[in-house]
Length: 224
Image (cartoon, rainbow, N blue to C red; front, side, top):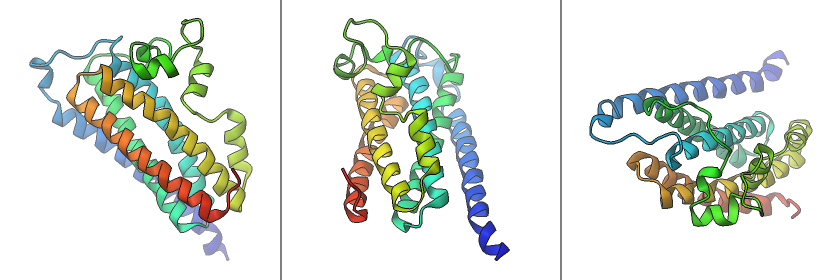
């Protein structure tokens, strides 16, 4: 009995250690692959689209990792467990790389109002400003980015079984839908080759994951 009760806990810690390792590896690879590159390429500044994207997407990814680890820990659905593992490890790695970009560029990990860097993009016109054109508050930006509220995170933590699976899928689909306009804005406004590559990967990968999660919702009988 004790072995069965501790198995999920051990599995959760294995995932946590994997996430830490991926983030550290992404940081190290980023440092190695870009060593000396800024001698020939001007680094993005603190008000650049790349800096804004890196800061905001780290916040966005952090919540995705939190939600993915929560459902991985308790779901009985093997397909959902695999997807949540992929989301947690993939986004942890991207967060580590984005953190390294800002270090490499000599910029702080935090900056101006969230999503303000998107204002000049087509996505920003529809997604990143208040009706009066002023900068959004952080809470307004989080809503625009499709992020879960504190109450929704608490509900996910309290839920179990099909209820938890379906709640996770609904929250993560919305979360992904908020990330795609951010990636599109950087593709429109940015110039750093690696940042553009990652933005394209986020757009393509999360679009595919949305389709996969919608298929899971149908299979699990989640209500709309």
